[in-house]
Amino acid sequence: MLDSEGLDRSRLPERDRVLATPARKDTTMGTITVPKAIENFIAANNAHDAEALLAVFNDEATVFDDGKTYTSGGEIRAWIQSHLIDPKIVLTPISFENDRLIASGAGQYPGSPLPFAFTFATKDDLVTDLSIEPA
Image (tube, rainbow, N blue to C red; front, top):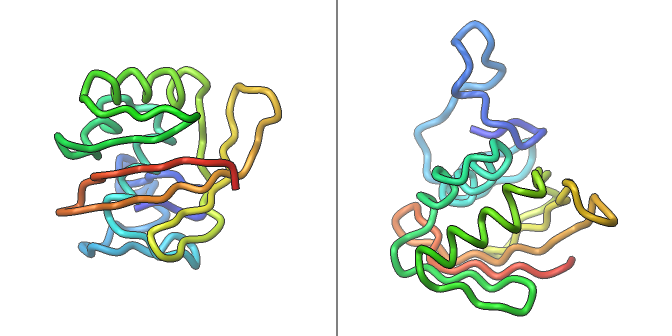
């Protein structure tokens, strides 16, 4: 479960956990409730874990970002590395409504942090489509 800072504390020893992880499909992040797939996306992103981030997407997922569409696992893996991991992006959720997450994206890029809109389609707790644009 992500805390209000967008961090997954479930990997910490029990004595160090601030929040317990609920067994729910939707998770409350502060006052924002998001589907499990989106929670997993944010947690893997903020942990800078490329493999966990790739595992959030189903095999036929598409990502649209910076005017390009990424469709294969290899393309999405390269996008994850170049757009999220290398610049050390940390997402802080601002709002979520109608499958659209508005989050502040801080990292090693000019103008950081900036707000972004992430529009998700999910199925079976996996991301099937993701479109990202400036918010």
